[in-house]
Amino acid sequence: MVKLVVATTVDPASVGPASAFLAMPGWHPGPPLQDIPSFVNGDVRLLKHDNSIVAEDYLDKRWEEATGEVVDEVIFLSRHTAVSNRPALTVHPIGIPHLREDETPLQGGKPGWAGPPNPRIGPWLRHLKKIAENNGLIPEFEVTLEGTHHGPTVDTPTLFVEIGSTEEYWKRQDAAQAVALVQNSEKNKVLLGLGGGHYVPRQMDVVRKDGVWVGHLLSGYSIPMEDPGKSKSQNGTTSIGGTWKQAIKVAYEATKLAFPGGEILAFVDQKNFKSWQKIAILGFLAAQNIRVGKPEDFY
Image 1 (cartoon, rainbow, N blue to C red):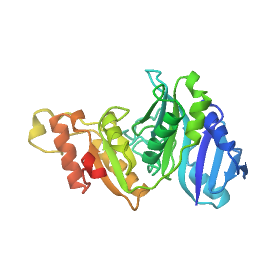
Image 2: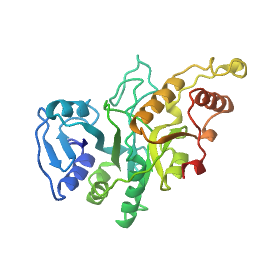
Image 3: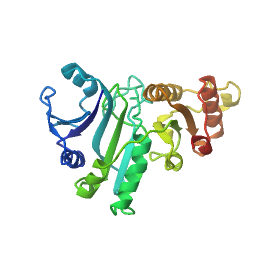
């Protein structure tokens, strides 16, 4: 079993952390994947391709087919962009489970799909924050989760770790070094986040504490619900259109796949939803036998 780290030469926020990884002892050239060079260090395989980070699908399966090595997790190194332009270090799972089949993804992946979240998401967020503090990046940099979004398509537990939010910060060597220094840890409570904005602040409040793994994080916009109007108090969830059920179910199944030994608890940002939405979501979770957790349930 090997870990696949993926970088792209066209992104300075990807090249910087990859170079910091490769500057550490123990690396040597590995077998190429088609025209993509690889580097090997213990059970880690680092790939550097020349395309958009979201353009190369199924690198996990392609590596297995080429080398016979089974990939048990994938880590993508990438840049983050935000309207605020605030410097940031972010971690997030990937997928676009809220899109209909007839919708075109703007940043890779496939409609209705969510990749299994990498168990490192929670530990990496906490460790990244400690490293950033120790290296003087805070308060200049914000260290935060992002909601589940974009591709590429993979079948293996995956995370993105990103440097944002402008070219000035994408090239920052201290930020790249912080990403390279992140370590792993093991916990067993898995948070499935539902609701909130793109930076999921209420989920952030929970996973700042030790002891929480992070599964998929569906921001409010990734749980599309069509207001049923007058019928909303009469027919339960059956009259509420939109892909919200699909998104929740796909995100839960992908999280369950990624954490076979973990206890998955849905954390619902209830203030983010209208009353009829909250009732419908909680009812659907109960029907799916998905346990809902309060903050104290994760510790």
